[in-house]
Length: 504
Image 1: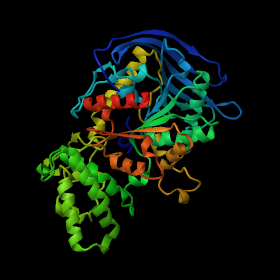
Image 2: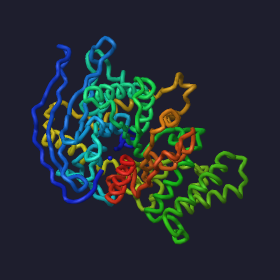
Image 3: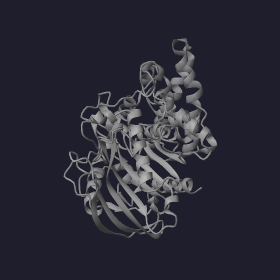
Image 4: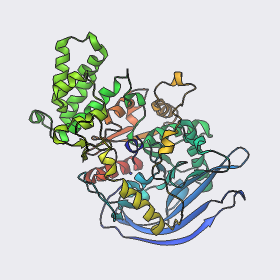
């Protein structure tokens, strides 16, 4: 499940030129029984957004301590600072992380935000084995904002220290509080308290971002934020978890099922729609009205009504009517991914349903693995470790944990006062409260049409409830999946959209 939930941010103009000069590594004193933090510092130049930009990088450890000042955790981060700017302490700063839970920040770091990125085929092809292409990223946001990529405890090089167990940090609240403390230490040591501050997360990282908003703005001396950037978001888990008795995900996933069917050309009568957007709007309307009503009625539904819904589901998804009848109108994401192209002997991806894979068994009801994950994982894993060593002078024998199943399986999902009071985890109200209390707090949301892990209609559901001020929400959509930046046209659009959001 970890590989399904995670992912990951940017690119722009002309032919880039990058030069770097490694600087010496520095260390700081710590407890004699615990190795001191190590920070590698390098300086670089790159052509970003059409102009040469000088910047420095600090890649290394920050130690968190308990109330007795004893180190409890070492957080590894990679921080980028533009050089030669007036009033650097007032420059916007982004704190960036991925999700999982159990993922390092490699995906956003090497996918969209950093000055280097992994080059992947734009048309959802598999990348195969090394060598992989790591290229300059002229769309990096380093020209307009400083950036800090954070690896939570148990991911990357981040680890618990001393007698503290790593699982102490593995939970919705525990994780948010520890990373909020990292942010506090960072802005203190780098004199950035008066800088505009944003959190940027992907997948579970959007859940983390919302939880951190509460920890920062309410729990750490009013560290007010200017906003959050949510990429492939999951805020209300009721809208995304297929569990017995919960019909909401069948509604929120349907537009992504339809988009996937459209992409793979299995919509029965595609010609009746003048555009993809018009088709998706019709699916949205059907989902909220006829389909939602039918699911709520259950056995109270008349047979004529049931047949009408089955017919519409067939027209929108291409799934066989008999299959829809036998599934009681309810097809979860894994069943859909296997069933849609079963007659072709292919399965569609979860993180990005544009990707196709082949399983050993055509008749099974679940795929072997996500083809949109195994198609690209190796490229990101090799790229980040090569980049650390060759460009950033990070020389470590320790394993860099790109993904950790141990973190995911050990996660404490309880965020409320009790399991009964919490129900499904939902952090959307935190963002609504932040908007009420902070007039400058804004939200940017990036949605992939072909994302079957965190579907766009579920995010729309979250943004339409709990008092979110839609006037301060930028909702953007891309013709790709969970990691929309691996699709070049979507990456270009995402860059433009985020630049506009941050400079407005």
